[in-house]
Image (tube, rainbow, N blue to C red):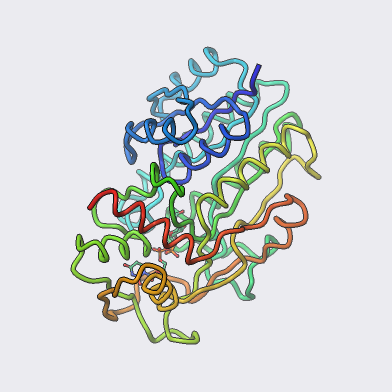
Length: 339
Ligand code: WQD
């Protein structure tokens, strides 16, 4: 009997890549997704890669009764990886209550069901956003949590506190929070990838849509930052490296290898690249000249953020393996599917 894992938001960008990595490791995956920011066709892409079609339940996790019924139906789930959340930083500033309700009520309803189990394993999708502009670089897990710059970032901070407090009084609940830096790229098969709805907020989809001619030009948000070339620095991590970290974290929880019942790991490459370096790497690795120009800084952007990966390397036994060029090439291969 294969170990059953629930992946919420499993038809989304990071969720779908993690489902592939889980299936390839022999796990049986059940996906919950409400299709508010994803497409059911992603199931076909996953099946094309792994030859296994995950069980899919279209459920809105804000429906408390639906969550309860789900766990009554699937009472042999060994672990939950919780991706389902609203994640657009700018959008969250305009609709704070939508973000607080969606990102927090769904987490609470899941944890309420999980704490009924004799042993429950829970992985939370968090973000380096919780650090804001860190005082020291690279950023390790002990870096202070700064006041959130957006309701989105605040829901990640509050979410981690909710989990920490629940784990304190519930020793049968074992949780890991994974703080992603900047996930980019696509599975090498180009059967799944990032599918932003409308105008992309994030850099890489905007680059690939500009390269394919869907966008006139890329605006680089500010070139007067105190960095080596004036543009912001981020830690861009291949989504498949991120996916493999989730499998290792889940195995750590299932084997009860963790040091405490709530652990936190930063997931990045440990390298920081400027926006201009990303553009140059994209041009070199695809042979495409990108049209871009500089514009004003974007509200809320931090100057620089990249991960100290020592804890993930030594404790989780995980290291990002793919290069920035490889990630950008995979994003481009995926974009060309929509030419
Ligand atoms: C990267 C850099 C921009 C677009 C956000 C969230 C984070 C996570 C990833 C959800 C910045 C610059 C971007 C453009 C640009 N999301 N840029 N022109 O803001 O680091 O992180 O997305 O989990 O939580 O905070 O990513 O890709 O938006 O921006 O110049 O058209 O690219 O200024 O320096 P960000 P991003």
